[in-house]
Length: 69
Length: 360
Image (cartoon, rainbow over all chains, first blue to last red; front, side, top):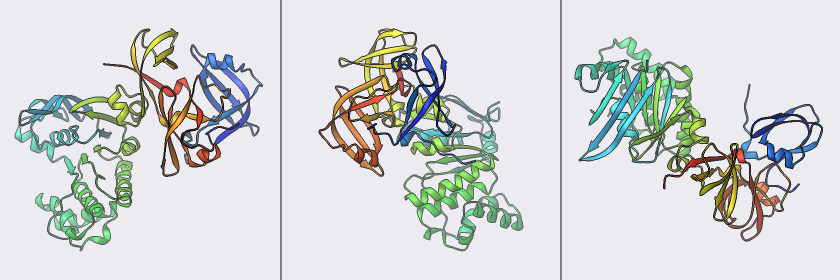
């Protein structure tokens, strides 16, 4: 995928949580880590998201926060 | 009860109002940043809070007591505060003497002075400079001495006016380290004016935005930076895409905003037909060379009309019918082979957009 975002992570949809307008999508990475995405319900329908579907989480480098314990 | 309360305060110089109807409450122990462009009234408000000036109208309360006009009350309150000015002033004496002067004026015993000055100088990283003539210090060092002079009196309130303005990056970093230590100790209420937005965002519990003498917005750093209340605040906090449009479709809170024949989708509680500004941060725009399938509901194709390198990032201006400014890393720009004149797709999520009512 050619995109101006440095982080393109492949995973599977683990859970979909429906809101009125938005939908929370939990994506499970192959190593078991999870990424949560908030998208509109319309986008989720357009992409045909369902539990188990393979998707990519795209995160721009400038949106990644780094923290220490 | 708020430690500092300002009610409808105004100030004028030569018949011109520089501060209008300011209401503000600062809690004990809070770190509050005043942000705004030069000339917004930040210094005037700090001087009013330090009781160095009397407001033309309104009331100032300190610890529940009206200190607006009573000289006795003002002096009592002022002794519980310390003020560090934008341009540090040092006296013609060594660093120790400069820091000690506030204690000597208060007739504090010599051995106590020594211990308090040493502690304050250690706090600002200037303990090795005690015998140095203060006039030979750099701007950043003078500022740290000024902060030590403020700390030595154990104030309940520390007022800082642009503590890092006009300093080189290394000095800024050293002064910020000092501020971080002071704030980390949680022993005083701090009110800091700054036009360095990330500084305000980094240090403050709450931020007050001042524009043209008015307190335009007060909120948490997240509220101010992510949900600015109007165009002026948005531009001040770095939201560089401010696009005028009208809400033409509304389904629940998902709205379609018409902009020059283009449609932007966003989430907004504003009603159908409302004239709005669409606010998008440059870092929330993603670029692709071809139309891709993603959850982003806004995708526009356009031509790159300008590219500017800023450190490791590249700012890209794209004419999509709507002018869009985005930012991406240098590595991404090189990988995508971006140059002026090529066409590409700019996409952004509805959740990255903040919609505000347009006043014009």
